[in-house]
Image (tube, rainbow, N blue to C red; front, side, top):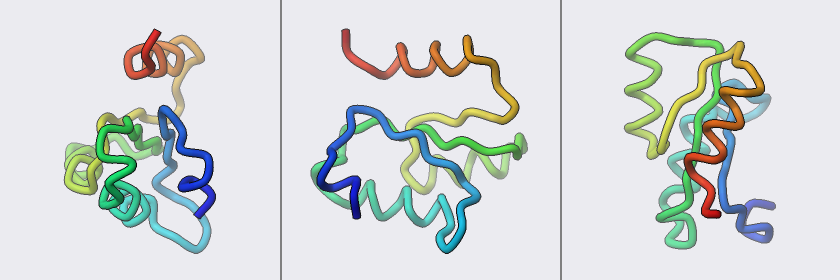
Length: 83
Protein backbone atom coordinates (compact mmCIF):
# COMPACT_ATOMS: atom_id res chain seq x y z
CA UNK A 1 0.00 0.00 0.00
CA UNK A 2 1.38 3.30 -1.11
CA UNK A 3 -0.16 5.08 1.86
CA UNK A 4 2.40 3.36 4.13
CA UNK A 5 5.29 4.86 2.16
CA UNK A 6 3.85 8.35 1.84
CA UNK A 7 2.44 8.67 5.42
CA UNK A 8 0.09 11.56 4.59
CA UNK A 9 -1.02 14.12 7.18
CA UNK A 10 -4.63 13.80 6.01
CA UNK A 11 -6.42 11.12 4.01
CA UNK A 12 -9.43 11.88 1.79
CA UNK A 13 -10.92 8.48 1.07
CA UNK A 14 -13.72 7.85 -1.42
CA UNK A 15 -16.25 5.25 -0.35
CA UNK A 16 -16.79 3.92 -3.87
CA UNK A 17 -13.58 2.78 -5.52
CA UNK A 18 -12.88 0.00 -8.00
CA UNK A 19 -11.68 -3.26 -6.47
CA UNK A 20 -12.05 -2.21 -2.81
CA UNK A 21 -14.73 -0.87 -0.54
CA UNK A 22 -13.75 2.48 0.99
CA UNK A 23 -15.08 1.50 4.40
CA UNK A 24 -12.92 -1.63 4.42
CA UNK A 25 -9.86 0.33 3.32
CA UNK A 26 -10.49 2.92 6.03
CA UNK A 27 -10.66 0.16 8.61
CA UNK A 28 -7.42 -1.39 7.33
CA UNK A 29 -5.61 1.95 7.41
CA UNK A 30 -6.90 2.74 10.89
CA UNK A 31 -5.67 -0.62 12.24
CA UNK A 32 -2.08 0.36 11.41
CA UNK A 33 -0.48 2.09 14.40
CA UNK A 34 1.18 4.65 12.09
CA UNK A 35 -2.25 6.03 11.22
CA UNK A 36 -3.81 5.97 14.67
CA UNK A 37 -4.02 9.78 14.78
CA UNK A 38 -4.12 10.56 11.04
CA UNK A 39 -7.40 12.25 10.09
CA UNK A 40 -9.38 10.21 7.56
CA UNK A 41 -12.23 11.99 5.79
CA UNK A 42 -14.63 9.72 3.93
CA UNK A 43 -15.98 11.22 0.71
CA UNK A 44 -19.20 9.94 -0.86
CA UNK A 45 -22.32 10.89 -2.75
CA UNK A 46 -24.44 9.23 -0.07
CA UNK A 47 -25.77 11.48 2.67
CA UNK A 48 -27.72 9.17 4.93
CA UNK A 49 -27.16 8.72 8.64
CA UNK A 50 -26.37 5.06 7.94
CA UNK A 51 -23.49 6.04 5.62
CA UNK A 52 -22.10 8.48 8.19
CA UNK A 53 -22.38 5.84 10.90
CA UNK A 54 -20.60 3.24 8.73
CA UNK A 55 -17.80 5.75 8.14
CA UNK A 56 -17.39 6.35 11.88
CA UNK A 57 -17.45 2.63 12.63
CA UNK A 58 -14.74 2.09 10.00
CA UNK A 59 -12.57 4.64 11.80
CA UNK A 60 -13.20 7.79 9.77
CA UNK A 61 -12.58 11.10 11.49
CA UNK A 62 -15.16 12.94 9.40
CA UNK A 63 -17.47 12.66 6.40
CA UNK A 64 -17.83 14.88 3.32
CA UNK A 65 -20.82 14.46 0.99
CA UNK A 66 -20.60 15.01 -2.77
CA UNK A 67 -21.12 17.32 -4.41
CA UNK A 68 -19.14 19.70 -2.23
CA UNK A 69 -17.72 23.13 -2.93
CA UNK A 70 -14.06 24.01 -2.91
CA UNK A 71 -14.76 26.10 0.19
CA UNK A 72 -16.21 23.07 2.02
CA UNK A 73 -13.20 20.97 1.04
CA UNK A 74 -10.72 23.63 2.14
CA UNK A 75 -12.58 24.09 5.43
CA UNK A 76 -12.28 20.36 6.05
CA UNK A 77 -8.56 20.34 5.19
CA UNK A 78 -7.82 23.35 7.40
CA UNK A 79 -9.79 21.80 10.24
CA UNK A 80 -7.57 18.72 10.34
CA UNK A 81 -4.14 19.86 9.17
CA UNK A 82 -1.81 21.51 11.65
CA UNK A 83 -0.62 25.00 10.84
